[in-house]
Image 1 (cartoon, rainbow, N blue to C red):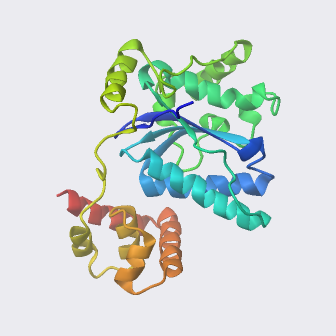
Image 2: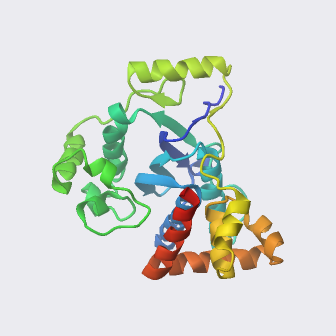
Length: 294
């Protein structure tokens, strides 16, 4: 059977599923779930991917995401690859963790976004891992009912369709009494209205079954301009901007600063941690980026 093609473009919404190799567990305990979520936070920040919902099951995972750029493949390669390395190191194992190619279904947000959000959050209930969706620790559902939540989880787009978080909870729980199966995706990779499917079917036919990708590098800032704007800033500030906004690899940044890949990684990680807590540093970064826009 031919593999489903990938359709990538800026602003696209996807339902992503990745399963464990040979249906084996990809999460063996709480520490693994936490490890994946921290990796998800890093990858979503790195590639400007919006996480609208997630659910981590023992042997597979579901994500409802939106890419600002046409970079789904880069994001997933980073997410699953880094997590696999960290999981293998933690459990002293080698080899593949996930089964083959992840499944990514392009979705029409107007027709299926809310259905998918409900479907993802109901997974633990259907698998009898939880009595109600909000009680399951490793999905995003409980955060929709609270003021707080992880910074990478974008709840607003979902909750804007409801009068209150409570109304969204009612909507999700209404699915507990239904079959809950989603329609079979067209061409194995598209879920949407008739017009939405028709539009992308034309692209598939035009590309003769090959992956369809929009413009690359849409959010990559010119390196010379970044260097000019960050000149005089501390080294970790410059490294973070080159990594985050210039999309340079840590190895390339290391060559620019005569530092090892590991040293660059530590600098970027520490700066990101500071950025999450330091309002003044946040404002300084925003000021630099506003100059870029000007």
